[in-house]
Image (cartoon, rainbow, N blue to C red):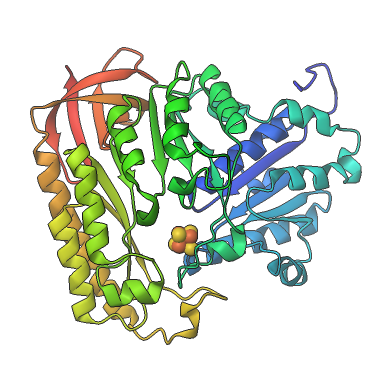
Length: 444
Ligand code: SF4
C-alpha cells in the first residue's frame, strides 16, 4: 500500500538491523518488503523507528554481544517512547531461548525465530496501533524489494533450503534454525522472476547446505535442476549458490555449474580443518583426502573455478601439527578465499562440553599465519589477471572515489572509472592493477 500523501497521519516507520549471514540479509529484505506493503516507511536509525527489529546471529560470541548491546540501548529508548515496538528475530531466538530472553529483556514485544517473518508481522498486526491493517496486503507483496534498496540493488539473496540437520560439533545453527527443509520450486522461481522484474541481475541461492536442495521433494528436483530452471528466467544474468557441503557436491551438480552459462564458476565449500582427527571430532563427515578429491573434480570440469572456504582455528585439542595440516591443505589447493573464525564454544553444542584448551594468543597467532598465507596466495592468483580482460557485473558507484565497483564471475572485486551509467551492466574491464583482494582496470 502506498501511503496517502494527503493524509495528516505520518506513516509508521520501521528499521531492521541485521547482522550475520546472507540468510539473515534475505530474511530482512523479505520482512522489509512486508512492512512496505503495509505502508510503513524505512527510517535510517533504530532509535527513531516505530518498529525496530534486530535480526541476530549467534554463530560466534561477538555478533551475539553486539546484538545484546543494541537491544539494551533500545530498551532505554523504549522507556521514553513506550509506544515503540521492539522485535528480536534470528538465531538468538530458538524455541528454548524465547522464554529466557523474555525474562532478560522484558521490553521486547516480539520474539521470532529465523525466517519466521510472517509470525512477526502477524504479531505486530495484533498490536492496538496496527489492528486496522490487513494481513492480505502483506501476502500480495511477499517478494517486493524494499523501496530503499530498489534503486541500487543489482544482486539479491534467495533462500532455497532452510535450517540444517547436520550436527557439526561446534555449530549452533541446527539448534536455532531447526532441521533442514527445501522451499518449493514454484515459490523459489516466483521469487526469482519477481526480483528480475524489479531489475535484479544476479541471484545467490542460499542454504546452510545448499547442495541438499530437493532431498525432501519429488525425485529429479535437486540443486542442479533448480540452477537450470533459474537460468531460464529472463533478466537474470548471473547465478551463484552457497554454502555447499562436501558430502553433497556430486558429479551432476559440478557438471551443471560447468555447463550452464549463467551459473558462475564460483563455489563456497568449507573444509573447516585440515586434520582428519579434528574433522572427525567436528563430525564433518569427510576426510582431508575426500575434500581434496572434490576440489580436483571441480577443477577437472572448471580449471579456473574459484573456491571459497571456511576454516576454524583453535578448535579444542587442535595442536600445532593439526593446524599445520590446515596450512598445508590451504597452500596445496590454492583456495581463492577463506573465512577464518577463531573457535568459541556455543551453548548446547557438542564441542562446548570439551575444554576450550587453545589459548586466545594461540588462536590469534594461527589466524594471523593463515591470513598471511591466504593473502600471499590471493596476491599471486590476482597477479595472473594483470593485462587480462574480465567481465564485471557492476553493483555500485562509489561517489567518494568516483569509480564503479563490481565483480567477475569468479567473485573478484573490480574497480574502474567510467562516465557511462554502468549500474547493473556487464562491462568488460581490462585489468591494470592487482592486489590480493581487489583489481583495478579500465573499460576495455
Ligand atoms: S553443516 Fe554443520 S556447520 Fe553448517 S550449518 Fe549445518 S551444523 Fe552448522
